[in-house]
Length: 532
Image (tube, rainbow, N blue to C red; front, top):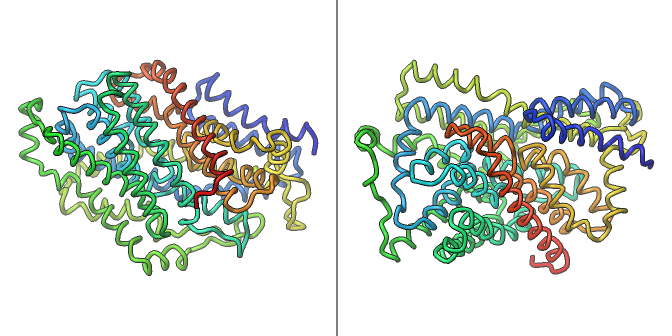
């Protein structure tokens, strides 16, 4: 194991970072540059054939389906709801919520509704900023809050896509007979949720009004953290409920804030600031009709996951694998009839009788979707491909074994030697870096998951330690959402304030570092003291 191998392994990652920060290139362009660099390094320095690189690239794209195709279907659903007027009706409704209590409003909209939205595949950073502006928040706050609000439950975004990716990566690493279940992973991941969600609530209150906002909002913030902790404890105990964590936590936070408002004698709905046009539109377009795509999707997901027999059949038995593609011959389980992307598309079709879109609206939806979807979908997929090439570099098709240690093995060996017992404190910052580079927690897991697991195994950690270290990586990747240039630019663009994100990112960077530092502390604590 030479220092040259390590430097060559790090070179493509440094290139991606330079593309993002120095040359300010978008994630898809940076990803292509990273893929080219990682492929050249694999071929020239790690004795990897072009066939292995191409097979790994194709395998990475297929492994990304649980994220990339959800992104594609979510963007289609959002375009459909936007062009049919459903989204406008939902925005009008949200503007009326909890006007008398800013803290409750923040918890309900940015954590409760934001978590629920991102769990079913919507994008809070695009949807919420215009609403917050209309509710009287500043541009700075309207950009910052949606980006940070759902971060604690980012692992359960896109109907649990990141935790599903994690379990697949972990089981590929652990091998047959040593697999872990969704609930085994979930019961480790859940331990961070009440801590991080409460701290995120504190961060949002500070952004809105500093000490005064904290004094006025500490109780709703604490209630939010407790509710998320209790609900996630229940959902993560059962395989079939793990992927419902984001949905149920979002609903529970909204319900808790409604109860709190009622208990304190405050109004839940206040229409006094709606314009005549908005009041007329509210009468014309029923809320249930506007919400029908999301309501149908939630009902479908509950029907597929709550009954254990249905879940076991779709998730464990009907794996619908793709065989013969990977370099090492391992099947690629798609679980296409369980994955959320299938049912997001189904929810769009099933909502048509309720939404009643015109031909022009359907055409406009498809046109907008075609314009918006390709680049984010490709961005999600390319980093899976990069991770797969790193994992399989050095693999020989002739011997079906590694001719030289892979890039992942090189990184892991150096990391375990250099960081040793402090790796638990470092891994969340690796996740933060990964989330910043890839723009996605799931892509962070795909790119750095096997490296993290290999390092943990080098440090003689048991299965609990492996999951915990990976949880640190994942949460770091999720916390990077608030400093992700793509997400902040998205939020700024939605209110026609491109450039304003630069002011947000400076403050957000401090919060992301502090939250990552706290998460690192708890990784080390949980390694020392087992709570499960």
